[in-house]
Length: 294
Ligand code: URA
Image 1: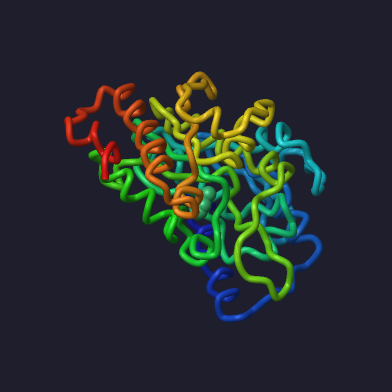
Image 2: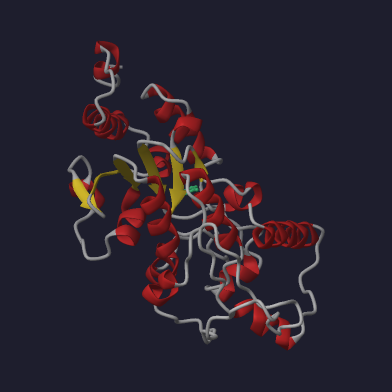
């Protein structure tokens, strides 16, 4: 990891600890904030360019022109500002993660989150699961799919013959959608929130290059492919292409938990059998027959 990313990592961890300890505001000078808002150009093997803590460039540093901070910066402009360092997928994901952890594109989510939930798993995975957004459990732990729906997802992954750590798991939205003051529970991410956040997921997919993506539920599908208006019941089980990668839409595990019928459990499992076939993975007769009769 380069020294800038190391410093950024330590700073983020420190701020997250303060937030967990109940600190809600930290004083920051205007110049520092402006300096932090400028893009960081990081290229593999080249020195990092970034303003010094005073906000002034050091003599050896070349500073890209400032990008005006705005709540509505188009996602494609934001995507241009993502610069991934490293050569291996692990290094590239680590570089991307450092930048995502510092993201404040959605001011309301940056203010309410405990932490950014970037994604977890094997950067070399042939299979990637994509959900909609972290809930309260994920926001607390910093890992996607660790609550009840996550336990079901882990069970599905293991029944497919993988370990959870073999797979890469992420969400369209990296921050927990904020809730009105005093309200618990989770809400769905809005279209705008997902559109703003999508470049992070797109960059994760570009790095990992999985052979198959599984989109979990209608909201994740809407985030990934906003132009498709067909409902998830019709979409599931049918292959689509996302960035030239085969994508299987299926039910969200939380939906299956809510509507825990044999039909829904069989449906999600049939979609996973298609995924295994596509990946050339072994399927035993027992696997084929799960949920056929109970
Ligand atoms: N639901 C999601 O879509 N993502 C998570 O990480 C958890 C629950």
